[in-house]
Amino acid sequence: MSRKPSALIVGTGIGGLSCAIALKKIGWSVRLFEKTDSLRATGSGLSVMSNASSAMKKLLDIDLGLKNYGAEVRGFEIRHSSGLLLKRLPVQKISDEQGAPSICISRENLQRALLDQLGDADISFGKRVTGYNETHDAVHINFEDGTVSSGDIIVGADGFYSAIRDAIGTESIIQEAGYICWLALVKYSHPKITPGYVAHYWGRGKRMGIVDIGDGWVYWWGTANMSNDDAKKWKGTNRDVAEFYAGWPDLVQDIINSTDSESIITVDAKDRTFPENWTKGRVTLLGDAAHPMLTSLGQGAGISIEDAAVLGYVLKNTEDYSAALRRYEAIRQPRARAIVNTSRSLSDIEQHDRFFPCLERDVGMLLTSKKSMRKRLQDSLLFDDLAIQAQ
Image 1 (cartoon, rainbow, N blue to C red):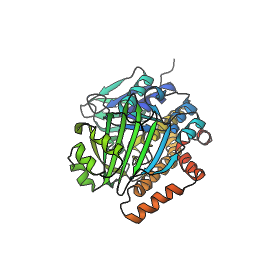
Image 2 (cartoon, rainbow, N blue to C red):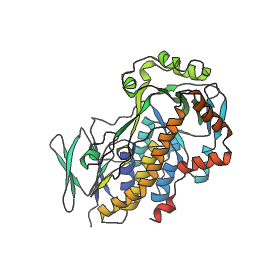
Image 3 (spheres, rainbow, N blue to C red):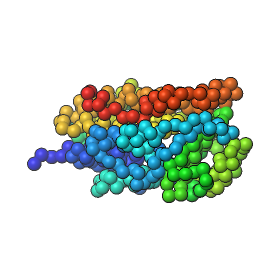
Image 4 (cartoon, one colour):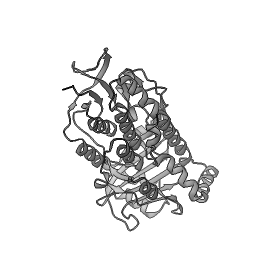
């Protein structure tokens, strides 16, 4: 009986767990390594748009079953900071046509969903990578504790500050976006927040999102222009956050003030320059380790899951692992680059703080035709498996 090929996956976030699911599906042995002492999921939420579930289903016949862990998007509104409705987005319709839901979910529940899908998992904690070396038929990871692990490939799914990215010499420079993000989950009810409700409010140099994630829980986020240094140092209460949105709809004020100050997470917004390559021999990158992005499209998780699905697809029934990893990179780079660049451009537009650019933005959204808006959304929400199979 032939030996199962083995993957060493560094990182146990969304990308790492999704990668383990994909490779396990095609018959690989997987080992996961996490630098912290336990699995952790911050107290915030996120979206997993339909392209992610579609990629897993179409390429690997994996049903992530996320409907059971979060809330399916049923209504998506863009509103002015005054409350004026600018546009309803056909997210649910596009998702339904693709046969895969767009889900809003807490990070904790997404982690649980992926772990349930993975089943028995070989996870080692407290494993900090110091380097790796490659021989003619294997790769070997060196850890800070003096241990070494060997396998057929290494997948760096270790996030924004990836040690594997540094180890293979991939250059990707931090780009500061110049604003703060507040993130929180709160048990909250309001007549406007119906099942599957998503609303984004646009103001001058600030935004607010309110998202149903199921079971009476709501995920909200806010942004405000300031230097990244100031964002890193920011200390404040829920009322301090609410002051940034003075004069905005009562719902915005109330949900912030209904959230314990200790539950509000603060992040400075940033991404990285897109790398020229993220594969070297039998080592590759996935998710934020390869292509971190700003949150404007809500595609960080989805593109990581797409990466995992494509990686599983190209490694199926091959023994030339280096060639398969090069193929994975060649397939994924154009798609990931487009999403990263669109997220950055949209972020710049949404964070406008001068009157006339904001007016142009808001009127533009109000007047955009349904056909044009649908086309824009389809570019990110649709996963083209046939194009991948043709490569």
